[in-house]
Length: 67
Image (cartoon, rainbow, N blue to C red; front, side, top):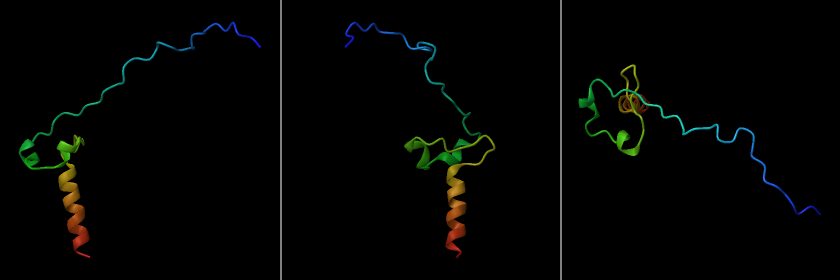
């Protein structure tokens, strides 16, 4: 049994950096964010096209109540 093992450096070790952080610009109209529960949980709840998670969820729930 061979006991004189020398450590080898992994190929590619040290080439990775810190994780890439992604960000979105804040929504243009932050007044409609007042009282919204989603940002407090940590969701990025708005999108660059101007829609937000709160209004989307409201649309879905209104649609399902009509059934």
